[in-house]
Structures are given as structure tokens and as C-alpha cells.
Amino acid sequence: MKIGVLALQGAFREHIQMIRACGTDAVEVRLPVHCDDIDGLVIPGGESTTISKLIVEYDMLDAIGACASSGKPIFGTCAGAILLADRMDGKKQAFLNLIDIDVTRNAYGRQIQSRESDVTLAFSPATPFHAVFIRAPIITAVGPAVTKLSSYNNTVILARQDNILVSTFHPELTGDTRIHQYFLTMAGEGSC
Ligand code: GLN
Image (cartoon, rainbow, N blue to C red; front, top):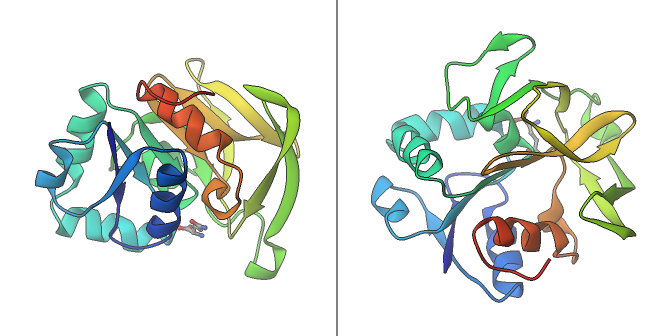
């Protein structure tokens, strides 16, 4: 099994390290042809406007859509979650629209209001997960098909709809591989 990590901008190297730490092959994805032999895709955090422009420029929009519709799991963290969301500030985005959530960007405020907090994962509740938020979005609404997997301050911060997983924080920046393991189980591997 091989997981692709969209490597146009942002924290892609950290995701590759985490997936490899879970014992699974991980490769950088920049072009549609790179999607042919991957079993799942991570869209990392970074700057969502920049990544969205690069996705269009590198002709990756349809390739990501095709990945999703063929059932391959896609994991978007922070900016990646924004790019997968159906709506932003109540308005439908003209983009991937792969998960029925509404997001507001930079909703915790300025960089200085970025934060870290111990949160509970629904699939691994015994040990807290240290969540790192960096200029994070807030998920302001979730549709009925979305499963809430973790919350912070009464908002959902980790959510799944079918083969799409999103987090508003950065699980690749801790040494804790549980969320990546969970994603790998969605791709048919892993031991979570
Ligand atoms: N603030 C960024 C955005 O709106 C997301 C930040 C991140 O991915 N850590 O795109």
C-alpha cells in the first residue's frame, strides 16, 4: 500500500514522515499521474488560497475528485480540511466539495491565538491526543452524514464522511500516530 501526500505547499514532509513511521509507504504527489498508484491521499495544512491555486495550476482538481469517487480515502488537515469542505461561511465553495461541513477560516484569530490542547479521540478515548492548532479554521456546521470524531470548545475538530477525513489541527506535528493509523485503516491497513 502507498499513500500520496499532496506536495504543492505546506506541511507535506511531516505527513510523509508520520505515514512512514506507521510502516506504510508514502510519496509526494504533484501531478495527476502521481495519483494512479496511490491508495489514499493526504492534503496537508498550509495556506488554503495558495494550495487551491496550485491545485488548479497543476491540473490536480479532477485527479483529487477522481481519487475520492473511486473510494480512496482522503485526509485533509487544516488548510486541507478547508479545501475539502462543501461550504465556507455559509456559501458553497466552487472547489472539491467532498465533505458536508461549513468552515470559517482563521477563526481563532491571529497567529498569537494559535493554541495546543489535549482532546479525546472517539476511536481511541483512553489516552488524550495533543492537538496543535495553527491559524486553524472552525467547523461551524456538519451535515447528517458526517461522524464527529473529536471536539474542542464545543466545535468539531476531527470529522469523517465515508472516505473523507478532516482535522482542523495538525496531527502530523506530534509524535502520536493514532490519527494517521486511523486514516490507514480507512485505506485498508493499519492497526488502530
Ligand atoms: N490559516 C490557513 C488557511 O486559512 C490554514 C492554516 C493551516 O493549515 N495551519 O488557509
